[in-house]
Length: 173
Image (spheres, one colour):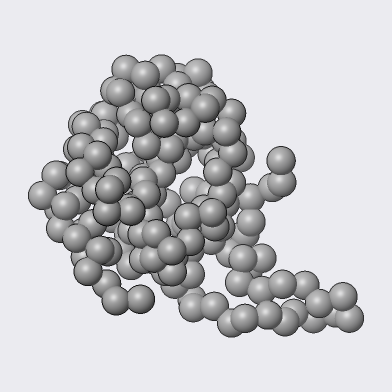
């Protein structure tokens, strides 16, 4: 498996003659990353997903950990919003912070809460760093071109989640 891609790596490509070249990207471009997924009804345990595989689809990324009380309160609304919008092409990704809880705790959480969207641990906490996550839960909303449209720190209720997902769906690209 390759290492997660940093924001600077995602924004340019190396030039063998030295220096950088490539397509200029917006400062709001979401850093690419790789996530090894927990098993659930839609994903095989150990399946690897890169954010860049989802280009062309709006994405909601939720940063959480199992022993976080507001994360536990928010997860049913995330799951319901995912189910309500998966036919609209909106992808949801859950990124578990490791530290207080283990990978095993994360899989138990996914099983206990019946989470069916793609979820996996941030094994080196590099995704959390690249996205500047300072509190939990945090949710990042990406446009179809994977521009960061909104970042939210703290508990999101079902109404706000729905409003923010609708914004993604209505954005011209």
